[in-house]
Length: 295
Ligand code: NAD
View 1 (spheres, rainbow, N blue to C red):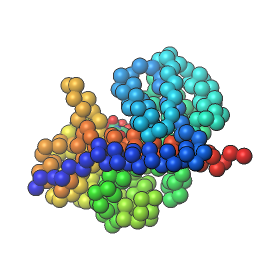
View 2 (view 1 turned 180 degrees about the vertical axis):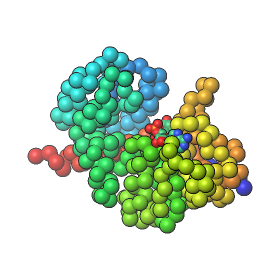
View 3 (view 1 turned 120 degrees about the vertical axis):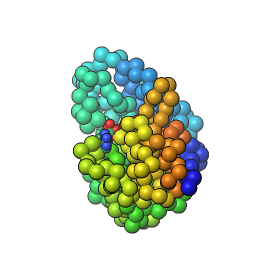
View 4 (view 1 turned 90 degrees about the vertical axis):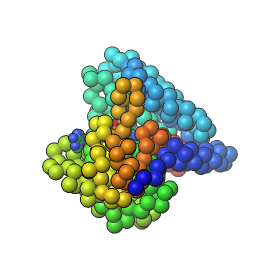
């Protein structure tokens, strides 16, 4: 078997042009230009690239982006002050704090300080809770990107066993929360899964992953998932972004797994571009929600 490649880049481009059309309609109808404020602390090269890509994507979609750079020595209190200002700024609809933050900063307090209505990453406890209850305000960007890609290729999750390796608050847990719903906003066929979440303490990982109809790797370890861990004819989603000798590789041993899986996402060009597209979607939705809430 040679796996079909699930093309995240072209799927994201399509999603972005649809969002750009919606932004143009919204603005033509008198809506405020959706604006994303990105807070970047320090000079981590990878973070700078991510933020630049998000900014460019905003501009291409007809949205505005504001980059707020802070020095590496910034304190938690200074960041909390900055976020309080951004929360109050009516022209800012979405706020994202690029992670990781420098060690001296209390990341959880900083993330908690983003007004949930502007929380386009969907990290706030209120937004997580709404998702868990099946009435999401914003869908988390990377999980949304994954389900969007599956939907684009008509790979249904209804009744399927989805195994997620990794239990982070950014990918593993929110993806599980989306897929167990009756409908997370993309239709019943792209929810209603039987979900297993594996992590660093899971025993017999390979025997669990081999039972997956859809296997999602979100660990951050190059080539963790090898062909012997994958069921013949399954779908493999590689979320990992790892730098190995100046190359970006995923968590899946792509070449060997291609011989077993029916479909697979590449790295790069898989889930990464979709994450950005879904951030734009949330920023547009945030602008619309805030327009309704204004007195
Ligand atoms: P994280 O570091 O927060 O969590 C990693 C998870 O992997 C943990 O839950 C841990 O329990 C689990 N784990 C570690 N070793 C394991 C092992 N040997 N077996 C099973 N589970 C193990 O990671 P994260 O923030 O979810 O990111 C994971 C990867 O996805 C990283 O490479 C990151 O760069 C990438 N990522 C990509 C996107 C994207 O848009 N494509 C978005 C977010 C994260």
